[in-house]
Image (cartoon, rainbow, N blue to C red; front, side):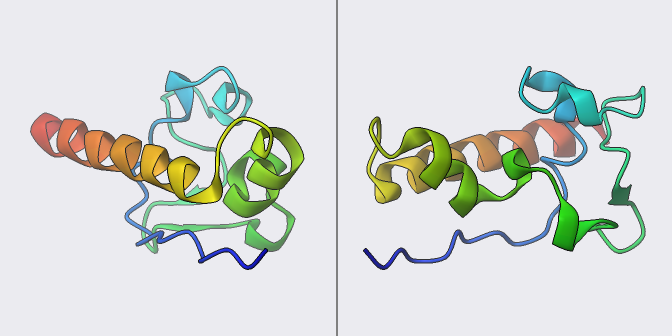
Length: 92
């Protein structure tokens, strides 16, 4: 099955909120931000070697294909992304 790529816009809000999920909290540098997040570029310092939880397509294939269609999974993540963007923009 050909999946449309996940529409990440590299805003970095998910990387600034790793403390909010048990699956990503191990990446927390102590302030809720991923230890591998570059705050200047909004990119991952270890992108080619990032954990599976950060690789949306691979994570879906490994753990979620029996629970959601790709499109449903993408839409769920987009909703979470929009919420993180709204919440983080209110903090500023």
